[in-house]
Length: 313
Image (tube, rainbow, N blue to C red; front, side, top):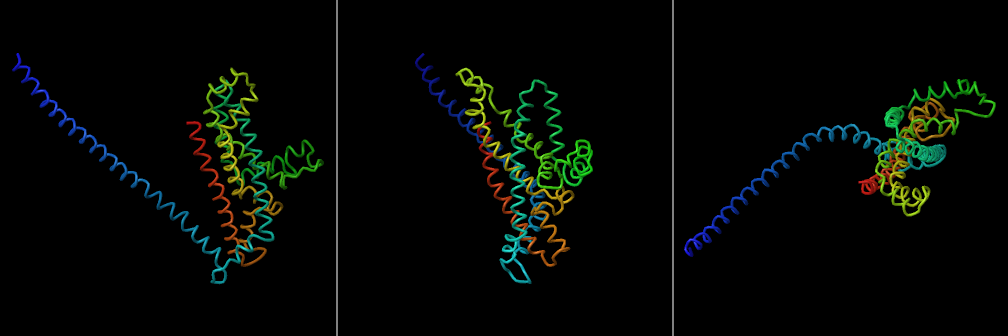
């Protein structure tokens, strides 16, 4: 009995050693295969992304380099005179007008979009949500000359609504700052709805229940819980709306022409050369000014989006 027990005891470590070696080899094999799959996946991903990177470099990089080079060039020499001219006189007025219009339109659209999105999210009718989000996806991309024509036919000097309600006698004019702002809201509000609905969906029902159980009112819940959580999304949506309004051109060009000073219209006028000849490089400098504003906007927007993702994950 003793010898058998000793023999069994001696064989057990040997079997354990063989099993351990086999397990180690199997684990190493699996790790090697997983590493190979990751390496192959990385090579496949690089191969799939490479054409997109090449296209982006050609379609965006080359024009950007040409624009920056032209903005610093005048008469074959490098100079800062183009930027000096782009930040004074009518060019500065247009830049300030674009910032004012974009900031105010984005603020109104952010508030209206938040209220509409909350009404849709809290609704018990799923069809209302689907219809609203589908319509928002369509209207957010509806702009340019068709949008200008629709508003001119509706709210222009001889538009259907203007004539029917006698708005002209009340001093209403579509071809003004406020008329253009109203037109921009047509695609900015749906864009805000699409932006803020996922954040509203991320609000936990338990947060509201806990606040109400502790004696908080609905207003206190929104002021102390919901709005602080939503604030990064709200600010990010506002920045996105500002950028969309700031870069819009076709709608304003077709509707107000020179009635409202905007940077995009000023650039088109300088490139066209109908008023003043030889302003191409100044137009490129104004374009670089717009790129700088857009870069600042994106620098604010991206961190806000990451913070929102952490809160609502």
